[in-house]
Every structure is written in structure tokens, then in C-alpha cells.
Length: 273
Image (cartoon, rainbow, N blue to C red; front, side):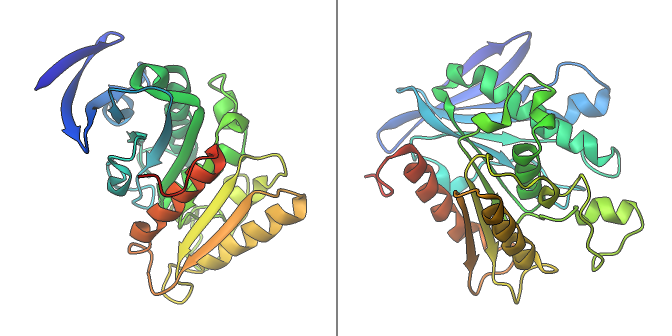
């Protein structure tokens, strides 16, 4: 069965289906920015997967990977049929835009979720932000540097948890490449999550693959972030290294860690039936 919903002035296609005894719907290509150039209108869209027979569900906003230069939105499939609302986000890409546009898009999407997710069975007090690789970088940046969400009258500190998968904690390599800086030359400037360590951030769960087969010191970047957040007095930073898994393969087992911490933060059983 297919149903059509009108979202603001834009028609979104929503498909309803049953799974594990619960009704779910998927709404695709909802714009979270209603103005801008053609590229903004093309990329600044999100999809929502949500249960239709309940309310007040946890929400996972998911940013795709691709080095900030490629990739498309998709749901974190291992979180389906878990009683959660999943939001998959597209954003503009380098080098068509500058890195601040990527970050602005990510913040706009999360702000849209805060403002609208109650209409999709979600609870704005249970919004978790996550993503793999470039998506993990965006997660950390907009959660730690308050200015991005403040630009949309939203508060980064109201995010329930930040859970980046193998995200860059130094300035992103694609941004460094645009500045003529090589992959092996680290940089920590205002576009590095490490630049924004603070003790009053939301819970931060850092997950990487095996340090010996990850990308360019990715584990060590995250380990340094874990250490620096601890030194600031932030007591809710966790670090996981998934042995035997490289940059791409680490995502599948990382979903279990993500779900565990969502349940822990919300005070729910970590392995609900």
C-alpha cells in the first residue's frame, strides 16, 4: 500500500510496510532547505524511516560517507525494525562547495529534525547523530562546535548523543587537499573536531576500525580526541577499536555499539526483544 503525504509545499512519496509485527513507513526526498541554488535544491534532502503505530521513538540522524566528495543518503540498515526513527541525509559536496557549506547543510538537517520529527513518531529529546567516515566527521563537528546549529536556532547540547563511525577528528583530508595539504600532514584548525573539545558536550561515542588497517591514523585521531575530552572533564566520551576490521568493514559491528549506547543513554534494556 502506498500513501502520499504533503510536507509543507512539497510532495513526498511515503511507502508503508509491515515488519516484525510493527507498521513502518518511508518518506523520501524531503527538502530541509527550501531556498538556494539548483545544487542546494538537488542535494539538501532527507529520507525518513519510522514506525507508524507508536510515538516518542529514539531518532538516529545518519550522514553518509564518501570523503565529503561523493556518496548518497541511505538508512543504516542494521537499525531497521528496532523501533527507531531513521533519518538519512544528503548534503552538498566538495569541491562544488566549500567545507562550511557541507557543515551548514548538516546543521540545517539536524535543525529540521528537531523542528519536525514529532510528526514522524520521533521524540526531539531523543535525537542521536551518527554517520560513517565523512558522516562521522560532520557528526562530531556540528555536535561540538555550537555555532553551526545555533545558526538555525537549535542547540547542539540538546542532541542526546554523538556517535561518529571512523570520523576524522583533525581537519578533514578533502578540505586539506583543497588547501594543498597532503594526507599525511595533520592540521587542527576551526574545521577540526579536536579544536572544539569541551566538557559540556553531549555524550560522545568514538568508534574506529583496527588501527593497523584503518585510514591514515584514524584510530589515533579518535584516541587523542578521547584523551582530550577526558582532560576537559567530559565524563561521557567512549572509545572503541574494532579489531580485524578496516575502514569500511568496521561499520557493521559498530551498529551494535551505537544501539547499545542509545539504549544506555535512554535507560532502556540494551538488547530489547
